[in-house]
Length: 147
Image 1 (cartoon, helix red, strand yellow):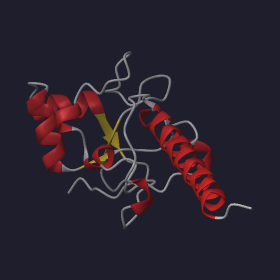
Image 2: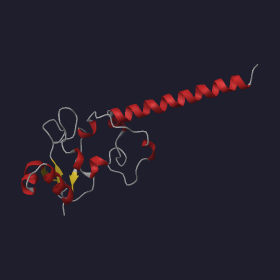
Image 3: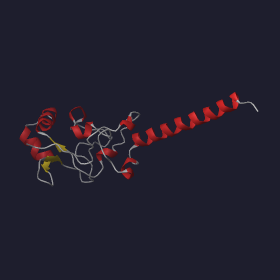
Image 4: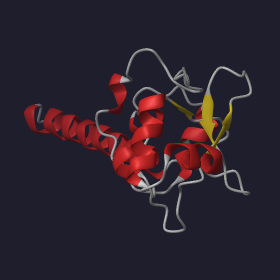
């Protein structure tokens, strides 16, 4: 068995992320950590890349530090091996579960969250909505309570 437990993954999805929209900044693909891949994921990625499974395993995976499965290798700069220069994932349609569940099932430190453009935009939108709601409440109060 190759394994599939994930660094930075939570057991329950984060319900506070309903407004999240990926802006393709690629930061999640550059964060420190590992991406474990299961046997079915390896099969799917190899097929997508039109490679024999053994060739895929040798070129794109290595044994996890805990020796409990395989992980994707990194580029020299630490980014995922499949992150392209345009911040797009080369294997997007068959990406591993860990990648598909970002940010909903990830437990990411706040400092790293600040690097994600989608999360930053979501926080800005929430803040703007709260300010507009507060301004509307104040205006409504003054309209309803003429002094």
